[in-house]
Image (cartoon, rainbow, N blue to C red; front, side):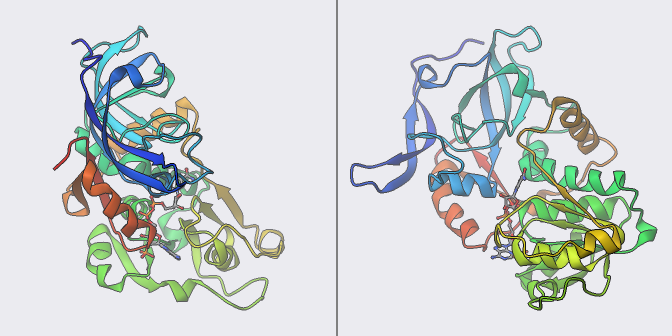
Length: 337
Ligand SMILES: NC(=O)c1ccc[n+]([C@@H]2O[C@H](COP(=O)([O-])OP(=O)(O)OC[C@H]3O[C@@H](n4cnc5c(N)ncnc54)[C@H](OP(=O)(O)O)[C@@H]3O)[C@@H](O)[C@H]2O)c1
């Protein structure tokens, strides 16, 4: 397989116009324009994550320079490799590192990346299954791994998941339920309760139920552990309501980046707050998470959770996500419709 060096291919490009306005639209580019790297991949799928939605708006904390192609994950086949570990036509995936932030990402038909970023697609996963997980599933699995490693068992009580209809949230619900935990799903979309129940949630709560407005340093114990994807006062409420020696995994900030807390939950209940980062996750645990997601933690029959969009449909879908109105997972095809 040789790379079509000068042949145009589609990508979603974020630009700043002469008037300073940010645009995000389908354009054509060529392999020659891609950043340097050891492995050139022909992308068959990517997925939409909250970070991508921010990148489509050229968020300064994510996008280093413009023009920029977002897409923090992708799956596809190797086209060219100067690294001995990869050969043309190998099925591979990439999540995190600088993909779609410091470097052009997966909302394109081709990406070029350092070999260190590349993960061989597990034989037990189809490309679409891999991107149904994508960065969201990889992050959810890291949260679940922390809870398991903390020693929390299903007998210890309920696990609460916030932002439950979102990408990370819904996959965390499904993974926890698969492992036998009783899951309470927190959502601002009560109409999506059937989806959450189908994923394994035992109870559905409103956001208000886990957003305590008092300044009490600790509240009645409710949960054995928590997966928080939203941050802010919701995360602070969870820290104050997790039971003795429980733990909270924190990965998101859609509800805020502040954490109004006292130290009492840590001192008096021995609560642990784990930060979760998926982008720089070291290679060994990274490969172990993908192994689990493809074998003993594999989630089957998730087609109902995902929908496919073409590159030109992404800007609208991004607006829905930023407004907190999307649910489930969005698979991105590097084509125009
Ligand atoms: N640390 C990492 O490595 C890492 C990796 C992946 C994602 N993240 C972060 O995790 C978060 C979720 O990512 P995602 O890709 O799953 O996003 P997503 O699909 O957009 O899901 C976010 C969900 O949060 C809930 N939500 C939205 N606005 C809210 C608000 N103002 N208050 C409370 N809840 C709100 C909504 O669910 P409900 O309607 O069901 O409540 C929404 O579906 C983001 O902050 C993202 O940046 C971090």
